[in-house]
Image 1 (cartoon, rainbow, N blue to C red):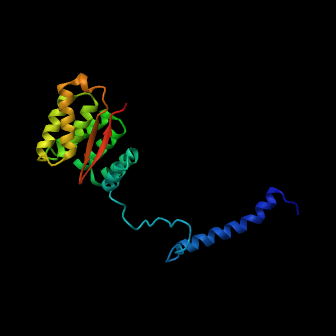
Image 2: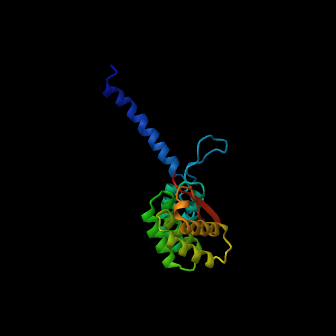
Length: 196
């Protein structure tokens, strides 16, 4: 018998069908596919468990400087929780990290309008306004954020100080690289540097 493609396929087809049926039977068994503890292969996904909170994942990714992935996590959080102030603030902060300033400003303004007593998105809106050259409005926003925070946040105070210095002497501070700090919910802060 010659090894023509048709003859080869005829011999391999029953073996492939048997292997597929065996894999399907094992996968459908009550225990499913089990993995040995010493196995070097990654375990399969457990679809019965709930996913990690998108806001938590997004904040961790922002702290790691992974703005694109953080935006995806915040978008997933928006699908689960809706456009809450926390989600809007996270999405706006991620857009700022990606240098999408117009989109960041719009999202952060929505977050501030939704919850005007929350200083973190207000601070982040001030950072966007500074990046866009709207220094006078940024100073007002930083002052409101600082007042709402009772002066407890070093990041908001530092941003206000930089904005006031730039407002008082715009020609002197323009060539310097300023570092503005984004504030995230739950404490910590993100650092945004002006592009050189």
